[in-house]
Image (cartoon, rainbow, N blue to C red; front, side, top):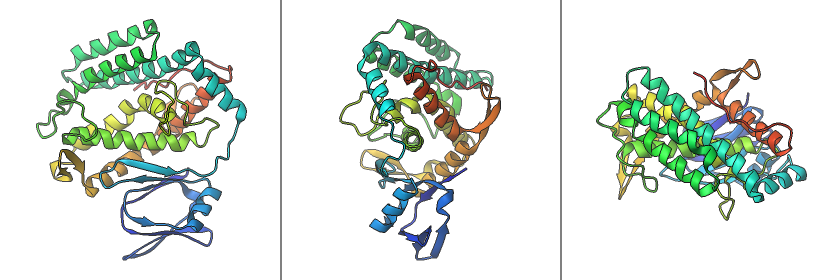
Length: 330
């Protein structure tokens, strides 16, 4: 299984013969290109055209993040899995309102079902989440009656508000209280962690979309407009609760990240590099963790689980099998 490369240091990333080399003041590190799936650049990495040509040839995406950990953009190699038929089906399903709402509803249902799984896990461990869990469950039951995308978006927003309202009960940590959801900028440490984690997940899903015939610019729940990508936002909704939120709960419960790992910049609370590295390490481990998929009767990693979700969507668009979102069973 190929691995992600995360760059936090300042240095030069270059092609060296048929492999990659990252050179810093501390020395050179050679990275086998055949083992690299994508590159996440948080530090100052100098590159050149020769490297970009090599990454394009090897079909490796390179994602850039700014100092605050916000996603800036991606070097997206020339598409190599072109399928005009899939793109036409994807666009056709988007333009046809009845078809689009079916797919968008599945994304919302998958997200809410996984939220309920997380809440059920903590309810069974004595956390005070029962009341809000029931509210999310009722919202989930209403999804079939909603016929407009805007209504589904509002319903999902309402469900996440209930869900986020459980974070304080789950964490029981006065140093990390939720308050209200704030994104750009996040106003406290917990919101900063959520934003950073979600950004990482959006980027990994984009990398996986690139390995399919799907076009990341055509989403179904999130509108396809002048935004560069939207399908990765749709798919990420399903996995946020079981990947990102579980990582946050673990990091804070084990005190692997503390308030010392954050800085205040004007109105924003941002994660320091040390905190980002801890989060990314846990994130990478989580993506490589394998779980059993009953439908396949075998174990797959969370990263590959994301790819499988995309393959299921492809089959739906081709009219082969109705799409059903992944729902965790633990």
